[in-house]
Image 1 (cartoon, rainbow, N blue to C red):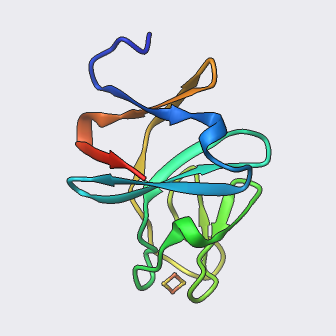
Image 2: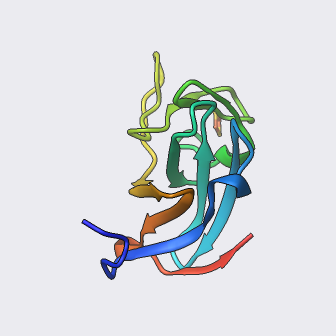
Amino acid sequence: MTMMEKNWIEIGSLDDIPRQGARVLKTRIGCVAVFRTADNEVFALDDKCPHKGGPLSQGIVHGTSVTCPLHNWVIDLGTGAAMGADSGQVRTHRIRVEQGRIFIDGSALAVSEVM
Ligand code: FES
């Protein structure tokens, strides 16, 4: 599988996202948070906590999870599911990283702007 496949959209480089930080993509289906972990894994989730819609992109990344800045729910970056006693799930988007460039599966979204 290569990056030339038509549904993969290049959204920037790994270096555009600080370690344990996030950047926000504005898309036609809403904002998507793109996270980079300390181990340089990259995940994309809707930027909307499954609890009350908090901006996950402003949360604290630890391991492969993010803690929502509003009420501290912990969300698994891989599945989008709330962890622990909380229940709920946010939509995730497939990501590929190739030679330091980040690509998102655009089949479910139309990226209009990268912030
Ligand atoms: S909105 Fe995220 S924990 Fe409440």
